[in-house]
Amino acid sequence: MEIIHISAECYPAAKVGGLADVVGALPKYQNKTGHIAKVVIPAYDTKFIRESEFEVTYDAWSNYGNNHFKYRVLKEKTNKLGFDLYLVHIQGLTDRPNVYGYEDDTERFVAFQIATLDWIAQWEHRPDIVHCHDHHTGLVPFMVSNCLKYQAISKVPTVLTIHNAQYQGQFGWNKLYYLPAFDLWKGGLLGWEDAINPLASAIKCAWRVTTVSPSYMEEMMYNARGLESLLREERWKSVGILNGIDTEVWNPETDPMLSKNYNLKTLESGKTANKKALCDVFQLDSSKPLFTFIGRLVDEKGADLLPDIFYTALQQHGDDINILILGSGDTWVEGRLNQIKDYYSGKYNAYIGYNEQVSHEMYAGADFLLMPSRVEPCGLNQLYALRYGTVPVVRRVGGLRDTVIDIGDGGFGICHDQTSVWDVTQAISRALALYKDKKAFKAVRKTMMKIDHSWDQAAKNYIELYQILK
Ligand code: ADP
Image (tube, rainbow, N blue to C red; front, side, top):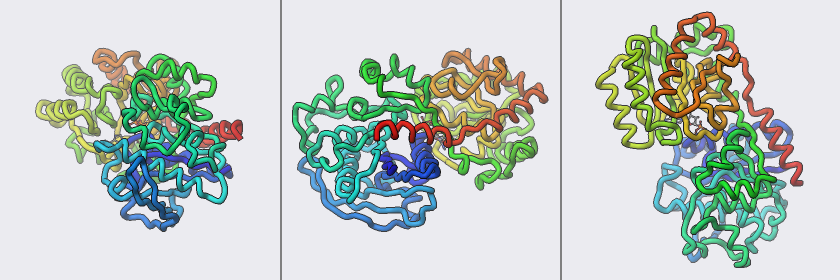
């Protein structure tokens, strides 16, 4: 089968969060199963894209409404990613340093989707599956099935994966004319409540809907920012498939970003060396347990509570713990997290920003990774933590529920029920007790590192799903 993934992010070309990690790994593992999976994303102005070699494979004009644009499809030349990566370059729209966050994001992603489908529709052959991801490519299923311009591919099955239902990409009906012509009575397939809603439209129009963990699929039925009833309606075609991780990129034995590589046998010395290097850089005490947080500083991740959680934990256990955080997002949270440094220097530090290298160093050097998320569709951080022998301390929600088993239940992590200062600080106390029991701590680390969360299984599950549609 030939599968084309259409996405806003793909690691390492453009990454904001987990979407990039998934779209940068799943196709690679699908190719390993003997199928052909390709990826297409917008041509942003990122370091990777500037520094890689591309060849032009297609050049044409298109339009959204009255806005005509010239676009160009570029193909990565070296095949170093394990799949063919295509970029759609639209001058003035895609070529910007950030993936999101511009006032004209609607226009940028509408133009990207139209250009991509124009390009695919004129291929000599039809792909077997068009797989879109999240709301940025959510108009694809509607356009493939309904826009007259895309008749050549109208019978190609479309699949939507929801990586996060909190973001839906709504825009006003006054922009309906952006879309290529279709029978107007089908317009209802685009809307939800009072707006055009690309995520809702994809849920209605895609042949199958997946999300990134079985628990999140269940949770969305009663918590999906207004889409609950629609998701219940379309339940028959929906399934939760747990994400994997790219075990080639995330491998402590070969990871070039670490101070010292390690494996199951050298786990203790490897973790100690990485922790020491990390603590030296961030002026922390490597003889004490190191708690970390990595992620977007948004309410979904429980970031608004982090300052109070840290103040409380530092007051309770100030002489026994270190805390290091890496993240960016809500400026109010960023400010408060920076402030803690003034009171607890030597025990606490924060790197406000995005840094892939530091994230790898932290997964390797930390003892514990905190994830007090309110919503967590799958969560990749805890899977990286497990692979690097770092104990996850997580709220029982979404994919965290599906991947972390509490030590009290014979597992390897520490789980709590609520996103609250009380629950997380209690969990930190339990983590400290585990840390002090050296034998148990070592055993837990070993168990975690042995767990297989590679994409092999999930890639097979997606292929089985596509096969039903063929
Ligand atoms: P989400 O997609 O909701 O942000 P995930 O857990 O699915 O959450 O994926 C987060 C990914 O982004 C992980 O690879 C994590 O290491 C990375 N990440 C998040 N914030 C940062 C940051 N500030 N610096 C480096 N990497 C980060």
